[in-house]
View 1 (cartoon, rainbow, N blue to C red):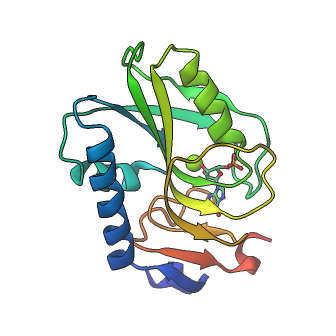
View 2: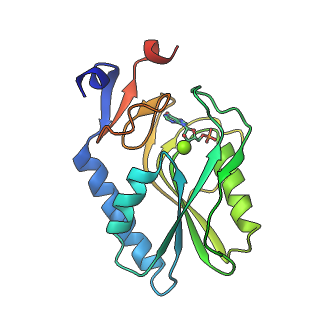
Length: 181
Ligand code: IMP
Ligand code: MG
């Protein structure tokens, strides 16, 4: 843990703040989606921590599935190239779908996923993002629910990685520039 902490410039959101925010989103989704039996789709791998907390704060019947896309590789910039690595298994025809994503940066990933799921004839597709990175988006994507806003910094923890590491940090911090540049 120590070696990971030493590579951060600051902790942005601690465990208490994150839990409180996810609890609020969970309750809100429970109200909006009451009687809809929504399908929450976790975008692997970054969103597993967010997803597993979020569903435990939801008090309504729901189903979950997983989608894995390739876009970033080991770099810290979006390649713009998105492809499906692991597809969903549920039939989402006529279903109310909620995409659960760790972070939106350029918007390329989320836009691709939203269109992909719409083509599966979902009744509705909403986006629920833990971190909304304030930046000039390549594409404007509608974000229906989000946890926190951050500036254009590279952040890790709570599922978010740099080169596959740091996902297990229970909080979110800013990665030192010298680590990735
Ligand atoms: P986008 O397609 O540029 O919006 O990128 C979204 C994806 O890039 C996320 O699902 C993350 O995997 C990754 N990403 C973007 N910004 C960060 C960051 O600050 N830390 C870790 N991963 C990030
Ligand atoms: Mg991701």
